[in-house]
Length: 239
Image 1 (tube, rainbow, N blue to C red):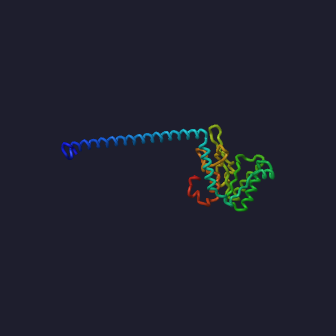
Image 2 (cartoon, one colour):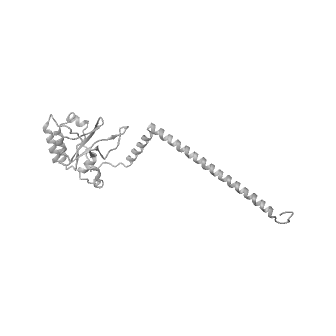
Image 3 (cartoon, rainbow, N blue to C red):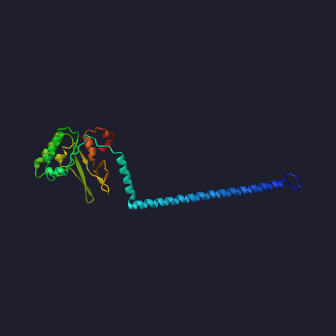
């Protein structure tokens, strides 16, 4: 109320409205300023955190820590997915006990032929003979023919291919033609060994520019007739 007007005064109402309007504008300005300040602080905090994480990752990579952590995770995952070997898989190893009984390595190829003859009598689906026969046997020339005959008579046999680097050139160590012709499949036996001495992966196909070979295990699967249909689903492993 206004004393002069003895009632509501329009001038007083306008002044009050202006006062309230100015106060509202100041409040909005302060609110926006605080909001922008919080956003800037948060942006600076996240930026600093990102920089610290990048520095930490770079340092761990320089020390090789990330590689070790990755291997620990991979090893744990493999242990969780472990499945026992199928009972039909038999390993005939060349171990210290065998060398003590038969004699020093290398053994005659006639002995390998006799081993294939015995294995063949039990109807093996495939035999992986993981021995390199890259040269003819000059001391026992008839042994090559005996081994070739045994390979052809007693089931599908898989022989290994070894890869070596001479200077800047890669070279494949193939079996001699006579023995290679009797094999059902050839497979590479190259293993990528990590710095801790453990092999965690293998190339399913490897070789040179003009020729690639399947991994030894894949070649054995093909020689056995692909019983699980794995190669039928992934024919590129042999092509």
